[in-house]
Length: 238
Ligand SMILES: [Zn+2]
Image (cartoon, rainbow, N blue to C red; front, side, top):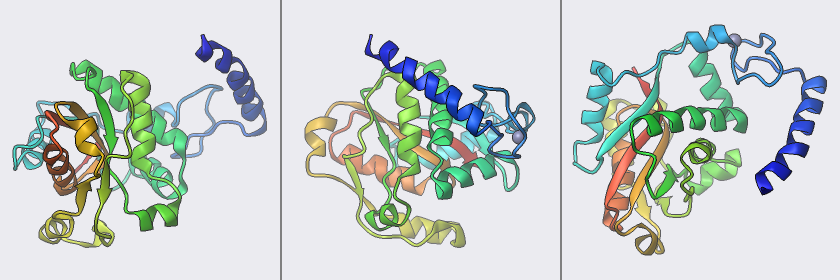
């Protein structure tokens, strides 16, 4: 009932904003039909979906599960060096476009549901260090987690993990350095054991590369007593 009441003014606002700011593809700026998606059909068609039989998926899962802390892995797309997904991700991460994060999360949420994993107890976004939150004003993984929650119905818990060390941007580092960089960079907050013990958790990231950050967070959640941690990412880098 409250959702219906809210949807009336929201759709009115959306209609209004569509007239003032006609919707465009967030990747190539082509105009979109009213009420359309975040990207045009041509851009969406250029993004490669993950197939669980792919070698790239299985290798990423194996890396995530090196310490046996991740019980399953769901990812929606492949992240290529160039192309629409890179542009969309950039606009989410550095431009703070929450609509992109929510839409990514909804797509990921559908994949989680198809995999039969939607019954999880909570959704935990990968935390950013407080310094980076101050710089950007938001955590893009939290937007994605909210989109996942809109599909699965489980609550988002952004208050259970924290980054203990400020790590330099990962993009300039090699694999070995990244691994060292994120080792024990995450910890469960003091309140976590009470809420996490015996629970199944969807751990949400934007792009999985080496999997080291996911592994570090999964370890922290298991340390707090989690029963199972399922790694979920919008995309796998390749
Ligand atoms: Zn486009």
